[in-house]
Each structure stands twice: as structure tokens, then as C-alpha cells.
Length: 122
Image 1: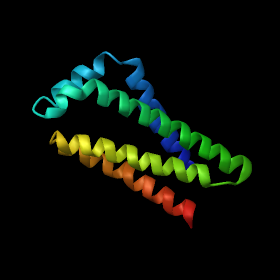
Image 2: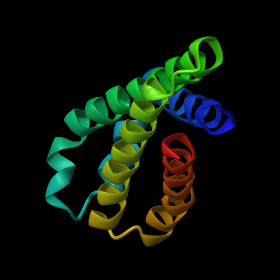
Image 3: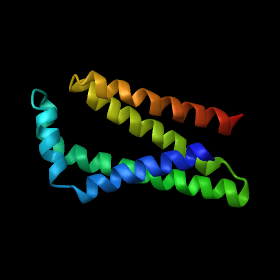
Image 4: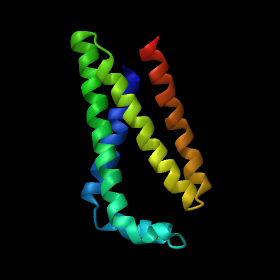
């Protein structure tokens, strides 16, 4: 349950930050991907990432509620799976931009998702 709460907070806050600072983030990302073909699609990729992060946060929160209220882990499992996909999306972007420190920092979050999936399914 704590892992679902952690991921719900993590992704909801990150998605909300992208919404509330919508004008600042594309400039930073344009510089981040300046040497990559991705720089032309930053606004679209930012929208996709924001949607994925908010979806992940909501799914993890709903999954947590489902476990607490009904003892049902299915929604939480789905939340962990979407969290894994969202982290992989972020990881691909960091590796593509050759920002290896940023990519490495995502490893811990991915491990948390794997532990959560393991705990839910066994």
C-alpha cells in the first residue's frame, strides 16, 4: 500500500508541476533535446508525458483505495504497470538526449515499481 501511495504522490505532483509550469518546461526541454530530432516535437511529447504522469498518479491512488476498501489489488497492479511504462518513456527520453545521470536516477523508481508488482502478485 505504501508503494502505491508513494507512486501516486510522485506522479501526480510531477504531472501537476508540468501543468502549472507549462510555459517554463518546454524551454528547458528544447535545450535538453537541442541536438536531437526530438526537439521539434517537445510540446507534443510534453503533453503525452503530462497525461501519462497524471494517469499514473490517479491509477495508483485509485488502486490504493481499492486495496484499502475492498482488498482488491487489480487496480493497483494496473497502476504499477502504467507507472512502469511512464518511467520507461522518461528513461527513453533521457537516454536519447544522452543525459545519463537523469536516466540513472530513474532506475530507483523503476525498482520501486518492480517491487510493487512483485508484492501485489505474490
